Image (tube, rainbow, N blue to C red):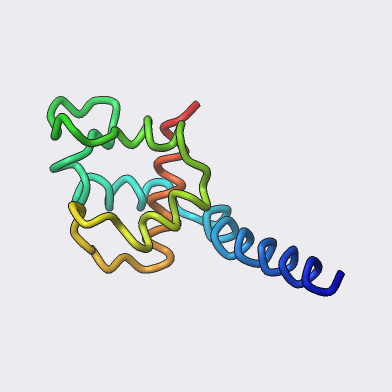
Length: 103
């Protein structure tokens, strides 16, 4: 019973840590970051005309991943993606912006 309670509390704390910043995030600032750092490879805005073919759009990523999954990915990106050393608030802003693209 004690292990279950600890695991449940840990899971809730982890989920809260990744989702709480998104609630207070700045969508407009997320858009600025996305256009500055991500638009070379990803389609980050509906009006963007060019990007790499083999990478998901921000809207597609938002449809397929939860906010905690997006935040975790941005915290530890895959090898092909450069490590931009994003702050927690940058990540929260990017996630909020990505979420705004998914109606």
